[in-house]
Amino acid sequence: MTQLTVHTRATPAGPVIELSGELDNDSAPDVRTLLPRLTLLAGQQLVIDLTGITFCDSSGITVLIAARNHALAAQASIALAAIPGRVSRMLHIVGLDQVFPTHPTAQAAEAAWTPPTPTSE
Amino acid sequence: MMRKATDGGGSENRDDHAAFSALLEDSAEDLYERAPCGYLSTLLDGTIAKINTTLLNWLGRQRGDLVGRKTFSDLLTVGGRLYHETHFAPLLRMQGEVSGIALELKTADGSRLPVLVTSTVKTGSDGQPLLIRTTVFDARDRRAYETELLRARQEAEREREELKRLNATLQRTLLPPALVNVPGLDVAAHYHIASTDKVGGDFYDLFPLASGTWGLFLGDVCGKGAAAAAVTSLARYTLRAAAVYDPDPVAVLSNLNTVLNHEYNGHDPRFCTVVFGLLIPDTERGGFRITLASGGHPPALLMRADGSADYLPTPGGQLIGALPDAHIATTTVRLDLGDTLLLHTDGLTEAHTAQITDGDRYGDDALLDFAQALAPTTASDAVAAVRDLLDTFGTGVDDDTAVLAISVPRPTSEGQP
Image (cartoon, rainbow over all chains, first blue to last red; front, side, top):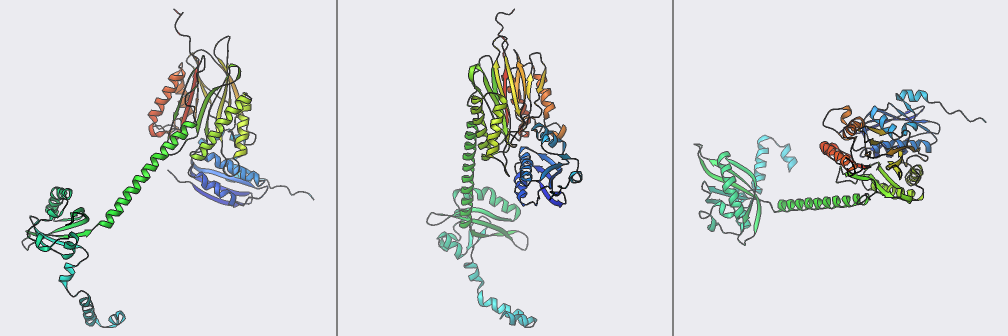
């Protein structure tokens, strides 16, 4: 059993949540309660970096959905980075691969972000 | 006074200390007699040679009745005496010391006094044992504490049993008590409970719809416990009601999606993956036409009469309840004589196996191999085989697993050569 570790950092493109360990029924609430405390501006992009995830079950999927709900409510976008093979298969089965933009790394996700164009006067 | 002693010189300091101690403990005899523990000296055969006042008071006895007349063993309860003879005394002889043994003393008024006993053997200058010195500590508080611990533990165990019973009851209300009898169809199901502590979120049902058609579903709610059970219950009843209203499988799952999505959104989303099937009997050719709609659920397995087996993929179907407009994918197949359709939840494919395979989970490929080896089969044989398979995983199944199978029986042998 590896505990879940959660690390967040801010980038100009928006916050990045780095998760590693097991994302399951026990650890999912840790991430969900963190979401409202994130600074996420309209037009920014919330990135969830899954590099270190060793296990993810259906409760883990709820975390991704909660994060998406949070981003949409803030008029921001969401992207997943470095999805492990097993999580990728799971996202495919539940049809969420069509919902989340994905990137090989958090850096790539950041680079893909385009700042919102200022509204013309 | 302390400051003065500290400030003073070496010898003066020691003298002060000695005087101070002597003032308080002026008598070694009094220290022995009225110590806060019992003292007892016995000869090697156990005969009491010396006993202090504290212990006499605890026992409610006179010195003259005990010294030279009774043995240490005589002071013990029957059980204690037995323990003393078989364990305590032999250990003492071997090691020269025994400490912290819990025994019970009999007092003059017949009550029992729990004590902790420590004994050492005093030897003479020639190394030969002379007598046994014993200290006796009052253990009434400790015994009360242990009794309380035991009671609390028994209470906790009772509550755990009660919780298990409640969970089992709740689980049963989420599943049909028995599957209905469908003319021309064999039906079997199995629910494997992975944990008795938490209600799982798998569900299934099979029920009649209008004009001879049948509805069936099997699904898996994310999470475990009471909150998941509430979603399971809502999903099950919504599916049945929606199917009566409009049996089109896409419409049924869309309705469920709307209900769950309105009920649960925001930071604690709840969803399920589910397969809903509409069975229409083919009155001319026999068998059934089945339309399966999938909301992000692992694909069903079709095991044909000819011995082939394959998944029935429904690509693009999305889980139910998480997105306002989930896409629901469908597939339609014929279930002919001798064909078997198996629906399962991912507790089966996510089970840990003894063999080291890809990520040590059983997996979709292994399940397909299993189905290919099994085909042709029947609903009851397929479910029995899955049960056996789950048994071989043992505790490797860490999520609940539901399986539901239907098959069209071949005609009985009458009329055939």
